[in-house]
Amino acid sequence: MTALATDAAPAVAPPDTERWLRRLRGPSPERDRAVAELHALLLRAAHHELSRRSASLRHIAWGERDDLALQAADDALVAVLAKLDTFRGASRFTTWAYKFALLEAGVKARRRAWQGREIPLAGEDWPALADPGPSAHDAAEAGELLRALRAAVDSELTDHQREVFVALALHEVPIDVLAERRGTTRGALYKTLHDARRRLRAALADHDLGAAS
Amino acid sequence: MNDPQRELIARLLGPEGPEVTCEECFERLDEYVDAELEGHDPERAIPGMAAHLTGCPACREDHESLRELVRAERS
Image (cartoon, rainbow over all chains, first blue to last red):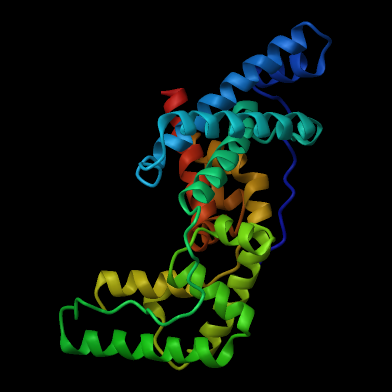
């Protein structure tokens, strides 16, 4: 993974950004009004995120969705106010604030959708290549690569890497769900997945991976 | 290989090049989205971001959602 570049913040912030910062850093009652407006903004963002996920939340009552959105907005507001002094002005303030609400709502929605579901950690169920492709050669090529990949998963990865790879990459378990069950973070799990993928690519060096680059 | 087979292999093996971490992605997601919507090249400002968004579905969803929300707000 790369080091984070540190570009300087823009010299002049957009007017709405300056106004938000001035009000949120200023005295009450103006600050209180700004905080209330910010909460409303974050709640709208949380509802936006949950509406994008309506398919995975279809079994959840509307009242509970509203509660999820409110919890997400509350948690995002706490995060935004706590990190206000770290805002570099590299984006508009509202874009910066929205991301906290989207993260909170997305994580809560993923976890709620997987509540009570078992996470597959073993790799028995590899996808079958139902469509053989335009030619027998294509089917053979893909099949051989998948067989080699499956063998590399068994032989090259640690137990932890294998479980994370199988859950996240093979079975597409949401990373935040696995992180919650394992008591870890999205970043830590993705680092494990990244290392596993690097080992697998090295093990498959003799194969044509052009399609996966 | 056909497209579904390519997509499956790509999903399993992830991006090949250097990429930012999930923490770095979240840290600069707002900057990346604003740069995209203002017509700049966001990958030039934040190398490795696009690769990470390819390899990490959760960060990719966060990115798509933020871009959609901000774009709708400005339209």
